[in-house]
Length: 251
Image (cartoon, rainbow, N blue to C red; front, side, top):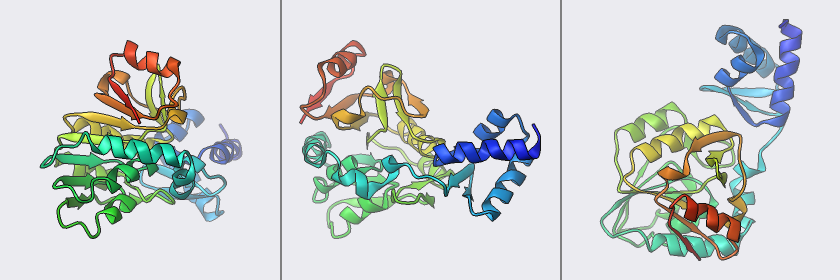
């Protein structure tokens, strides 16, 4: 593929996706890693993207699913109830990883006065515990992803590698018969590591996340120990969880 044709392809991809890994770009264009690197440098100089470790973030488009302020207002009442119910599943004295996202922020608000150890890659969640005298909080390092308040990338993953937790409570972009999925590989890499270092995994997600497949597959349903959702969860989605033998509770 010639340079001009390849860069048109990259512009098209970045007009539709906010983050794309260098590996994906190389695979879709058939170009080498070094060629993709040069293309990204040129497109960054044109103001079309920002290079980050592992790929690039588009300046042409934005994924509203990654906007924490926008997501906080969506299904807010359901998220408040989910947060209260999910927090009841956390035992005092336990170590819990809290993944990023607006629903898990609500979980954190119900844990701020509990005697627990918290690990999080979310700046907004860490701020919930700002005045807490009982919870001990570890905030991972990493690249601060725009608008999400989430720390991602290799530094975050290396921090998680050295830790272990009794429980992970996380949100998710999509849940279907194919399993868990999210919007990009940068997010998925960190969440995959969180799952690996946790003894138990709880998904805290409102009903709108079900029946949807996001861009990047994350994990099969068999890796989930519990789902906490809201009372509007469809019968079809409930049957899916039952058939996968995933316990669930509705707030």
